[in-house]
Amino acid sequence: MTSATAAARPMPKPGILDIAPYVPGKAGAKGQKVYKLSANETPLGASPKAIDAYRQAANALEFYPDGSANELREAIASRYGLKADNIVCGAGSDELLQLLAHAYLGPGDEAVYSQYGFLVYPIAIAANGAKAVVAKESDHHTDVDAMLECVTPKTRMVFLANPNNPTGTYIPVAEVKRLHAGLPKDCLLVLDAAYAEYVRRNDYESGIELVATNDNVVMTRTFSKIYGLASLRLGWIYCPSHIADVLNRIRGPFNVGAPALAAGAAAIADKAHVEKAVAHNDQWLAWLTAELEKLGLKVTPSVGNFLLVHFPTAAKHNAAAADAFLTQRGIILRRMDGYGLPTTLRLTVGSEEANHAVIATLREFLK
Image (cartoon, rainbow, N blue to C red; front, side):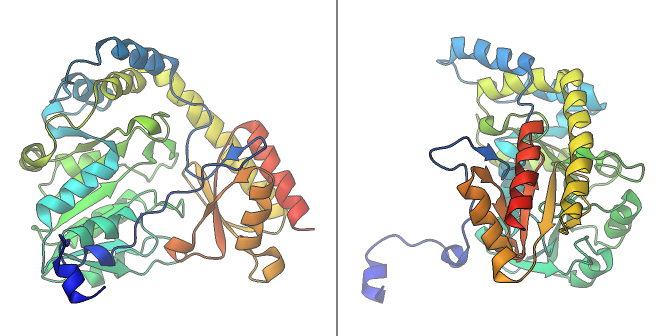
């Protein structure tokens, strides 16, 4: 493009065109039954109560939704013992992460995230003119010392996915507190707890206590994973009142639709459905891990609803060849090249049928 051509049309702010767009996983394959195990979606689907609430909301689509999301915020607050005023709802936790970056980052600022952190973080950072600083991980785990070494007087935000996607690893609450203790008071610690409901570890906490006792910590959550409402784009953030005030000033006045609000309130109240989803994941996460290891594949230990599977580097059995082989047979996993993990595929825990299918297909592939 010549400078004359560029001057003849609107141009984005500097740095925008340098951002690599987020690329979602493949959705399917043609002409056969498909097992989509690429997006960490729950195989149990949404709560029947949430589905019914969504359908009921369809009777009033001509009206604007509640711009304050009062019913949903109260439902979340009741479930976790929080103050509703400290909760802000958004179109997925992605929107809330973007709003945080928009509110607190600008040119000259820096924000830190871990080496294999969620790809939305660098996008949100760069979109607001700030510099993304990557902290090396240790054996696919967040390294608190490495993150603290990245902090400078310019650091305004630190993103921590705990558990992390795509690795499935977590750090104990004591390490999260150590990270927070090492940050300046004017640096915001963003705890992304999208997979918190799946974790069964005594030394894990999602971040509620840290938010409640500090002015520079927030926690984001999503309805896309264990609640099965991914298509509705619904998330929430628990934050100090001064941050909630900021987010409510800059978010869209009706940023969450009425069907999503209704479904979310019903979903979070249906504890039995969530417990069923957790039990399914506990059973099949362990089974998949054991079966993959029997095939000679390394698996990063996960506390989420997915596994990072490592393949040999030889062309015949590498991750790219495995992905192509699986896709031809209607089994869709997630390539991790964009995360700097080209020798891996991410596998979502699926239904019993899907889990058996992926193991049988990989056994055939590795012959």
